[in-house]
Length: 327
Image 1 (cartoon, rainbow, N blue to C red):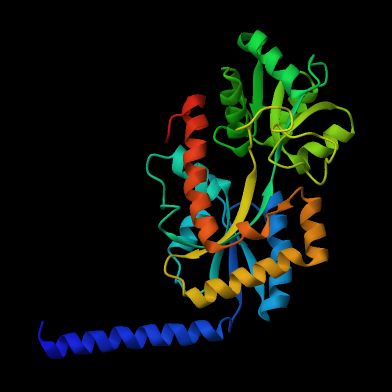
Image 2 (cartoon, rainbow, N blue to C red):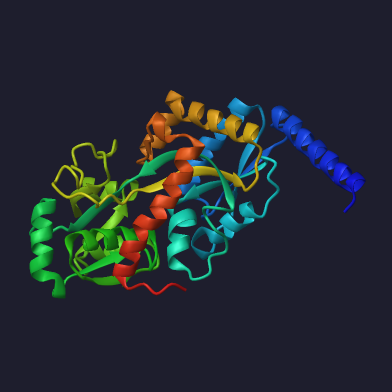
């Protein structure tokens, strides 16, 4: 390559960079698609639509949800990883799309760490340990003692192998140092029905789904598997308050753009998402879903980048302990 060619190539690259920077400053000029890697109607979908409504108002463009379920969230995640990094396609990422996908599959459809541009962590939604109503334990200390004494004859349910409810209990079991039989179901509803009927001993369920059964007194609430108490079950203590650390099994939501998204777009979307979270009406709606808005110092792109790396490492331990074979 001669000098003239080098100069031409450098000029072209500089021109493209300048053009992208100018476009980023004017962003957004058109509707923005946010992919939710789950079916419509579930908690994550509802969460996404609440956020999209407020983001539309703040950004002055329509922010709409597209549901792309499949492969534990990876189909939706891949669709964003492959999209143009222009800021008009984003992902409402979750523990399923960015953490469990990397631990449950030998060949994930993408690399959670390198194939996305982190925008910001939004909220965490805790799991709650609920047990059959007649289980002789009313606190986490009593539950751990009972599990250690009766592990061979106990079982726990989940919404399916590899689901957040499965791995949440796998983390709990690992923390207790016990091995207990897992009974996977095709969804949360049948698992809860069998828990009510006493056919399984316990379940680690998303707080907003567990709450109606707790309030109806059809199951027994033991503890919140989170670092902080849930706003929808404020009287239920956390595992840490009960004397057990490393049992935090929050699910979470965050915004991601494709790899290579302009810094100016990331900054604008991050600022808008923070403003959306702080809007009283939006915040109230998210809290009814059991979501806890993350603290200000955890909302930066840099924090989210490190958070994803750490979360993948954290959950590798219970995945191995659970005996799940990566697919």
